[in-house]
Image (cartoon, rainbow, N blue to C red):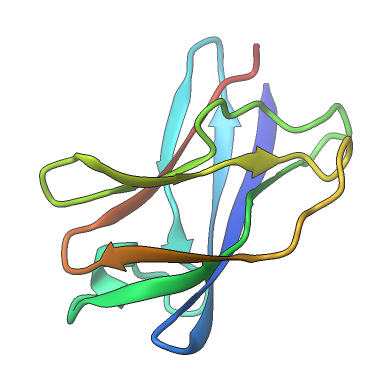
Length: 122
């Protein structure tokens, strides 16, 4: 079993935010919803009045046991209230690749939106 820490940085409404979560992988795939690192609120609760994410970094996956982070084919996925994919951000494992800088984007978010990461240890 591998514990993987997932984090993603962004700029929304002109302010910086970091969303993160711990994911523990078992024999099957794992899904986790990332929370605001400061308030521990979901993406939808953090931006309940609606805003646009203007800069986004990669979904950074770090392992706790030094064996390498779990893999995430989709990286981080932004879902609207109907669970439709609004946007996707690729992942990076800093133990095997450099972390790239944040990039400009235009991702609308609001109440009941989710930021999820799907990982697997295979």
